[in-house]
Length: 337
Ligand code: NAD
Ligand code: UFG
Image (cartoon, rainbow, N blue to C red; front, top):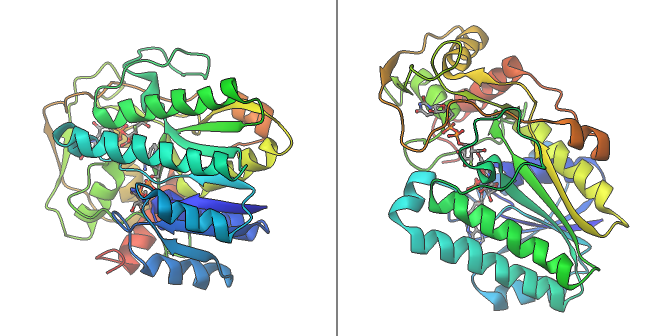
């Protein structure tokens, strides 16, 4: 298939492009480099030996999207482009709602105009809101997010679902990611936070490399076995493969399809710290601090539907996640720069 990847130089987009190319798909990608670097494109070429067609384009500029659709016969779109920092979204809600919602509206209106009606969307487990039932499955009601970023995911899910209600020729796949971590095993691509990381695993690896003095563990009084928060960490390469499975399954089908992408297993913050120490032999200094506002105690996926309907089962465990994260961090101590 000819697949357009929005946000293609970002963390998950770049890993997914590698898997698309490995699986014989043709890739066209765009990004505005708000949160990624052009160097990613060279790395993708080194890993795969294949070329993609790339556009520097902003989804807020409809004319830039028009050029892409005019110049290419696109079969499907995998839509990663968006802003994703929870804390920043609380400080800059207008930026987040504008970029994520208006950007998506532009993209789908250009798709519709060009009769491209197959979209795979990067959603998030955040749409389940502050649930205390685990594992969460796809039939559980979409809740209310605790921040504007999460609200944009919920709104985008509704907008995309309405496309099919209005026109039964749409194929909409909503992939609810749990916690993507790790990097490609080559160590050539990985997550490259532009500022102090918000998420646990890049924070741990920056402590290990000496860029940060210690990890703050946000609370050890949760109702979990060791008191720290439990999440479902999924290797980014498994996550990327999940997109290929979802895309393949979407061919010839019409409707709205929703899948959790996780491993179905939960690990605590301290378990992740210890797994990283075991994988690398490096001691991670940490301090227990107050809970972070908006965090929940425990969240992990029910993965049965993804297994049953698209044949997706994550293969990589936390040892591989930590090993590949550290390989990437060691080879690129300052990210892509
Ligand atoms: P990322 O920031 O690395 O990648 C997103 C890319 O989108 C970036 O390269 C950025 O420059 C680009 N972008 C942003 N606004 C754009 C615009 N207006 N026009 C063109 N490009 C634009 O993030 P990621 O971790 O790869 O996440 C990809 C998607 O998955 C996002 O939609 C994110 O919300 C979602 N998601 C991520 C996680 C996670 O923990 N990483 C979890 C759940 C969902
Ligand atoms: N944590 C720490 N210290 C840190 C960072 C995180 O103790 O410096 C803890 C958190 O309290 C939580 C766990 O590590 O218990 C994971 O936190 P992350 O920030 O890595 O991930 P979240 O589960 O909070 O959020 C992530 C993404 C969101 C997404 C959500 C649901 O950042 O975008 O998963 O999939 F919406």
